[in-house]
Length: 161
View 1 (cartoon, helix red, strand yellow):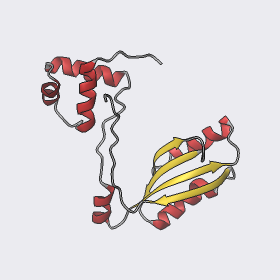
View 2: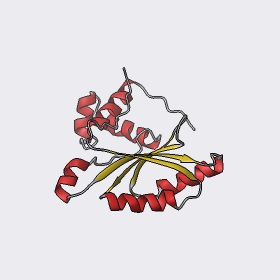
View 3: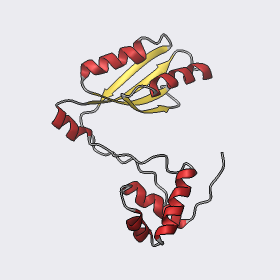
């Protein structure tokens, strides 16, 4: 993997974009104190290098649940029977394709995976559980923790301390 050199201006750009990626190039350039063409060129370079994976809208599950009448978030620990590279890759490949799985982490020690899942309701969680866990003979243990309140959600990477 090619390493990209970043300077303090790049770090400022990344900081501001993490807070509000909807800013126009003009507004972004102004906040970072560079010219608009420089800003555009640098952001393109950061995207091309993969430091900016994508820009998305973050929705509020709690407010959507109130508006739509449903919503269930769970953190799920998964332990596999066999943890060989092939088995880990196979399980991971299957779960990351499921739209209900928002985040998937391989972890150690303890369980093999931690998943953050969001579904409409408990019957939808049961369907997810049967689809991803029950039908997989290599899944030894599943432990689900259901969210009662989201106190903080900030997908921001700390760049400077």
